[in-house]
Image (tube, rainbow, N blue to C red; front, side, top):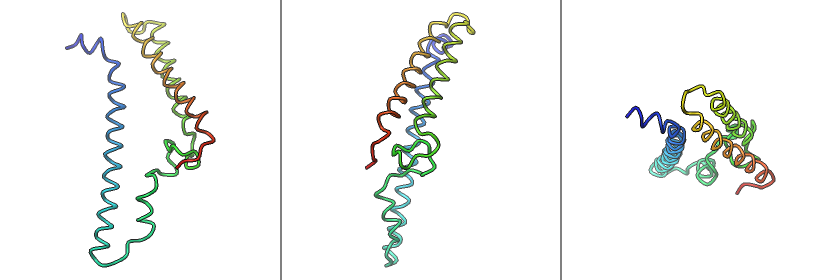
Length: 137
C-alpha cells in the first residue's frame, strides 16, 4: 500500500477537485430545494411568494462577490486571473521540486505534475482571454 501511495500520490489533487466540485453541486441542489420548499409553504398558506424568490430560481446561483462567477459582469476580484496565478505558482513549485530533487527518486513525477498544472494555468488564461467580452445568458 505504501508503494502505491508513493507512486500515485499526485492523484490526490484531481480527486480533491472532484470531491470539491461534487460538494459544490450538492450544496447548489440543497439551496434550490430550500427555495422550492419555501415557495410551497407560501402557496400552502394561500399567499403569493415574493417576486424576488421566484426570480432567484431562474437566475444563476452566484454571489456577485464570488471570484468564480462565470459571467464577467457578475465577477469581482479577478475571476480566472486568480486561477491562472494559482496553477502557474503550483506548476513552478513542482518544477523547482523536480529540479532540485527535494524528494529522492520522484523528480520525473514532479515534472509531470508541473506540466499538468501548467496546462491548467494556460487553459484558465485562454478562458479569461476568450470569455472577456461575452455576455452571460
